[in-house]
Length: 134
Image 1: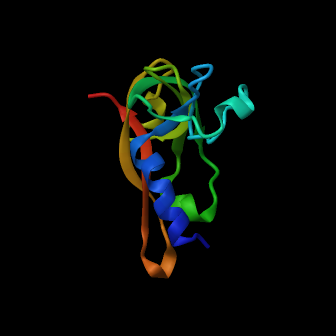
Image 2: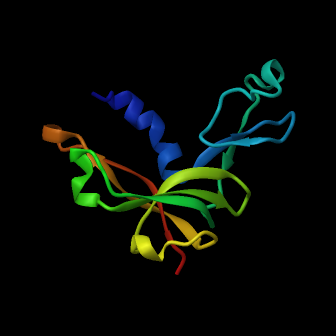
């Protein structure tokens, strides 16, 4: 069961691809961190919000055929590692393309899509996925 407060706290990161940047060493993290694991104490309370680029390329991917019952309507689906134009490597579902047409190096962009819903309460959870660039 998810908490409503947690849900609202996570919205900026899920909707806007927000990460953080260490002012000490310049390393960028996604998702957001409150402390740099390299600079440790020197970065506490100093991390800068960083808006990750919404376009990038498929670094690698996998087509998922065997899925849990909750995801049966989606199968098969593609999960990929995307290298954004600002060199951040992140994992996301690749949508709006037939799985057999996904290729390493393919240009993609972040899109907002439904992730799931909360059963009887009907709360719909949205987040980012990646689709081929137009």
